[in-house]
Length: 303
Length: 294
Image 1 (cartoon, rainbow over the protein chains, first blue to last red):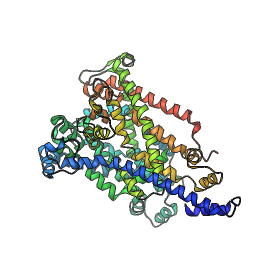
Image 2: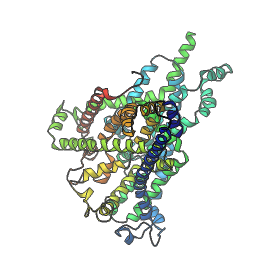
Image 3: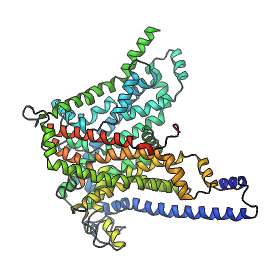
Image 4: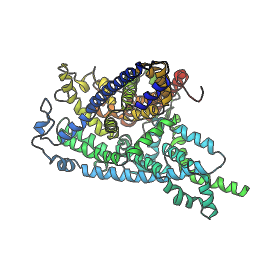
């Protein structure tokens, strides 16, 4: 900001020499006030964005009687850590956690591997019909899921896959349009010469892909992995229509079941379960923050 | 040369074959099936009966269809401006050189990382009328007693809209990327012309990021109209039918009452509506400024 104003002041010859310092100072003061106001507003908003988290953690450590105290108490006294083991055992949240992990993990492997293969095909090989098919791929991203969900449900029912993990896992092994798009854009940025050199050295396409392209595409693959994890870890709708038995439920369904069974009671256990469900996502976010951001910015570039 | 081209074709199709197979088995096939199913009455247990456009006809006579459509329309008109204005405002604030900028950005983005269902459970608690944080905060500014929120015919829909304010993170990040792409020289030129902060915002920032605004607008309208989980979990469509959203009604028809044909007809009406909205938004997008065209 200071360099900007200096260069401006130097360029604007109309300002008389005497007035320049004053004008300069007034501008600096104005921008300082502006930034202070911006900071105060942003900080106040941020507090209201973080407060619900704090309240959730605080409630998860309260005794049942403390939960309903009004006005709310932010620091529980006494701190009841036993809500966590209780929540994990009373309703089988441990089991739900395991189910969610299995589904999220196998989906992640499937969507990453398949999307890499398909993206490579679209990015690096010329074949008739490729560009039309890629347009169709982009088009499928705009198709509302509701149009296909009923027939797909019926197909899986005919296969006798209801109340199994297959309907949740198998589709990710066909690749996902958004991940394919994201990886293709990245593959396009890697110089073709590299591939030619590898081919001259006798490497096939598959070898080039795994030995050279994949190791070079770490950031893009990490973005896809992060998105796949987030999507499957929090997915509610698919497990809702496909899973019935209690021992097969995922964490999101388990949370809802807990609420239906206990109504408005036992909020401390509920919040402990909420914290446990949220923790893996938060940890992933803090470890891999830049991949979240780059992926979202890529979504914006689609348009 | 021709043999290597042939080889390329074979290899190309081999590489994309998983997606191509998925396209046929999980998208095109089901779409055709869904179109045909929408012309039948089918409850999964007895064989389907062909009724032509019968499902569509009864749909337009179904009072709850119109209720759910109106509810979704209200939700969209409330949520889209709220999310767009708020996320743009926060993005502009966080684009200034203010202290703790990265820390603040993280704070705003954090709710968007939270698994949706965990967030909804937390917000059910937030909306508790007697001891929840929302009515407590309202009490602090003198509104006491606060509304009954999720249990109130009048306030349930606004409550669902309000929850969205907490999830502006993704939209905000896209806006931030747009703001960072505005060339600095434009602001310097505007300053030379004597523009103040508001004028710079109106004449430089908004036109320059209008493609981003347009993108966020289209995506936000589409996703708001498809809202399901929030209403299903927080209110189950109630009280009464106050929060019976279109997709929730579709779910009830198809997966609670197993009216597969009726549900499919609803899905195609939804598709037509979303397609129509998108076309209209594109036709009315003369306000969007594309640098490459100018």
